[in-house]
Length: 384
Image: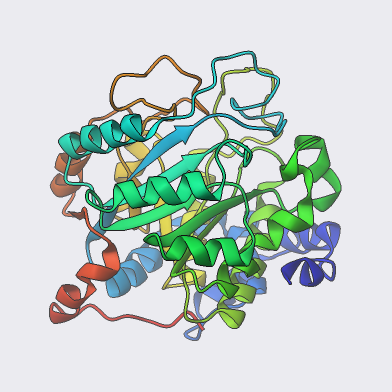
């Protein structure tokens, strides 16, 4: 399990190593032809690499074009419940937040599916829940997946970590991918942000990715929440985790996301760390240079401006016209949302802007359209 590997990696020593990188280290890494290791990734996200942002952008663009062409895979998240038993201090779904809780019925879920299909030809659906298995557990998620199959061809979930056999069960209901945010890999401070509830169990969450791999999940999405801890160290731990998963579950595909913290309904928690746009760009370029094959996703947490810019330089998946409250697409928009979006463009506006930038929005699963890309000369690279 990855928790055992993580015990061998010092947070403090990793931070020190990142900030000790030199100009010579950066030039050495940028000149490498073979695949990079985590130490190289640390170099590219270090302060020493900031003068090389333009060089990194060109490399990132080159590797993205070679692997993904000009395509941007489009997806839409659907929150089917905001009921949650956790007390994450930064989240609008915090159990102590005295707001209306909603668990969509089957009829309401279907209404949401129909409403989404009227926005754009979405085929990639991400079902999202709070963490309350007593009222929205595996059977509820399975039913939502069953109901989604007539409307969407690619189904993913972002829910509480499950047992391996539960993930496997959901694959029989059409599940293709699972997204889970570790939030932070700083085990010492993790409990500060997650004081109560199942999410407070660090090992259960971080080892959930192993259970996904054991269940044969087709695609695993991972990420840290930028704003909790020193971001360079946190994403380095995620890079270690990614390489570990690729080694042990090599048939699985992987995606990464680096959401920057935005205000939530409770408005009580302020980010400990602020990542500016240039740093987000540096991280994106570094991740693409580190791993040519990984899918890099930007959500509507980010502004339209930076999403447009990064769509030409390394990002390969985007959400559009996202609602973060249950029922937000149809007729129940007054419920508690998890966070406020920044990019409020309509899906068709996102599509228009991407096309003006020379990108090709793909509404179905990216892998389903890969055969066509191969015919156009795009190559698929192994991350290992």
